[in-house]
Length: 410
Image (cartoon, rainbow, N blue to C red; front, side, top):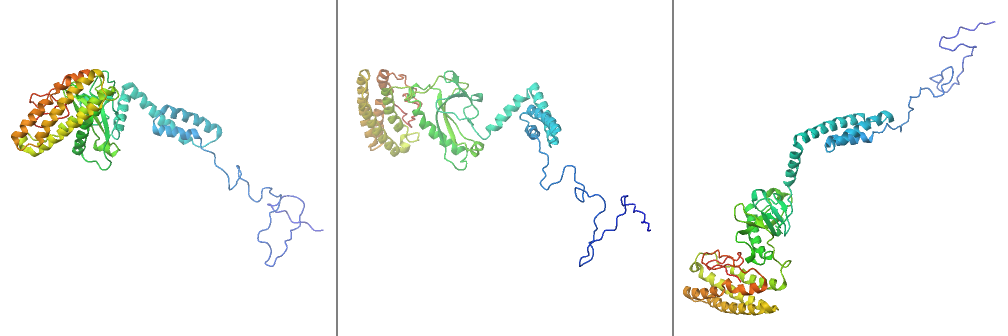
């Protein structure tokens, strides 16, 4: 009778089990014998608490936490960021989501931003801040003024950037009235002087399209313009704004100066268009103090005036006038024909004395007072503006400067 050996301390107690035999392979027994005892249903390793998988997803990030941080950084709506952060913290604790740090950061930043806004509102700093924002936005853009609008400028200064103005109704007092706008050519900034020269030439040439009856423009009104600056040019600003303003220091305009096809009748427009033909020719006088300084140039000018007088008379005769105006227009065109003959003779003069003889006669025949009866019949302004040339004559629309002899328009 044999007695089995005592059990190994690492083996479970129980009936004797004979040693397990392993099949022999060509290279000997297996290197790792199987463990004795109950089999582990999960295999040789203990499973992880959450389970393991190569495709396991981490907990999602709370969306409100992200939104809270965004609002906190931007400081645009700090109260919203603070509320979103607090809600996110509650959701994260309940749902087991990530983003607690984002929610805390957003809440802190939003809280600080809200405190700053409250302080600014209490001290008036918010208003100053908003004005600063508007000033910064103005550096690269301008407020667009359109034809027919009126405005006030800081200190009444009608020069500088177009965004330094406040639009106001034309019916009341105002600093300026826009009568035209145009765009400069693209390219590099041409310089302040070049921009100013272009604006000066174009604006003075465009005023008749808005205030067709120059006699109706007050004596103290002149042409101004608002131009792009070098900074606004780099932001794409190319617009020049032509305006009427008072030359009197501290002076204002009252009511609109507009008198064009939108407010005039057909006969008034026809008369003024004919008168502008003469004004344009008179405005081309040589820029010399005396005729003898440029007699050939003055003779060419007299030829242009003669041709303009012929065209003006033709335009006046071609229109079908009302019964009240027809007779007075006929008298006016007769004077224009006489003036045309004298200006033509001045253009062909052999010397200075002959030029002056015909020039003086032609100038008298263009006395603006001769146009008053026709203007009265048409319902136009009947008080001629004063002559800027200082020779005692009367000027037309005020824009047709006439060199040595003054610009007389009807």
